[in-house]
Length: 80
Image 1: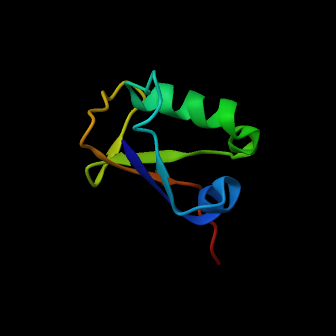
Image 2: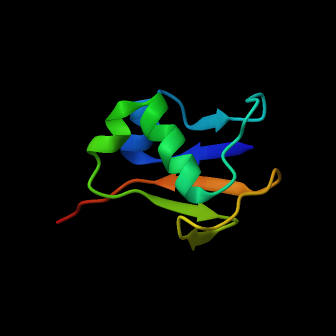
Image 3: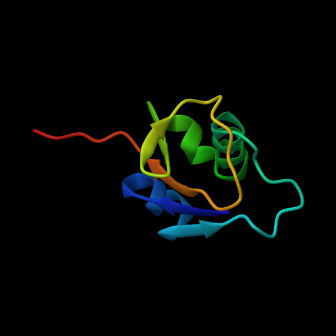
């Protein structure tokens, strides 16, 4: 399971990609993935929001994750 990270999410992890295929227990839903990220990188808990796209579509916390899914972590964006 490969995850693409953008913006501050990339800065928090220190990489633009993250591979979870080696984990014994991979997150099976978007909500579990968010929990995993907050547990592994507490800075994620400080973000005001965090969007997750699965296969190029925004996904709710209940969305099921499959091994071959393309997952993107999209942090809040500010602009002016």
